[in-house]
Length: 123
Length: 110
Image 1 (cartoon, rainbow over the protein chains, first blue to last red):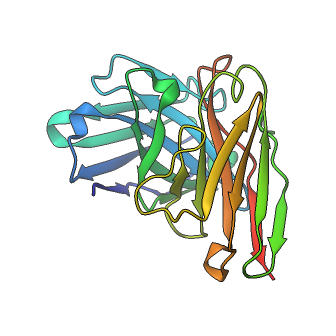
Image 2 (cartoon, rainbow over the protein chains, first blue to last red):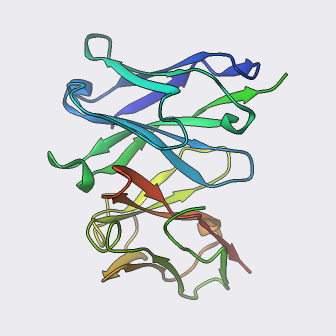
């Protein structure tokens, strides 16, 4: 059974930047698509970004488009989320999740999740 | 505001059957698979049902999923106290080019 572990969360001022990391183990990371999902305090889950196994495709939720960038380093079994121009409503626990399915991302399910890392945007 | 609709809460006594609905549109539920997740506060979400009605290994048969048109449902039979959690449906959305989660349903065992 694979595992994911997020890191890099913390307190950042509005307008600031932060880069999250997600380390993978126990599965062939380079063969799987990956995603970031977040949960704001008292709110539900919100998908925010997807990246294909070879980084040939990236998708973003409208709420983060143009501010966040997803990337990965298959040699390091790592997934990243660069977050710029952070706002108070970006405060959330950020989860990385493996996308499992066939070549069509629309069929994917998120079958492995990390424990999450908390990002707090506040002055 | 999510493009998928779920009831905010559902409840039942131990042993009862609880059903959670998930309503969408032709751009998401009607044209893509639906997955269901169980989430306890402070924990990693857990995949319960994938591809509308498939159970991952290790998920009890008490959990079942179904879909018809633009609506999907999760049923929990033989409700147990451990089932108290938030439940989310999710699907890809062709218009948004990504995935959407429902707002979540909090299940309470009375």
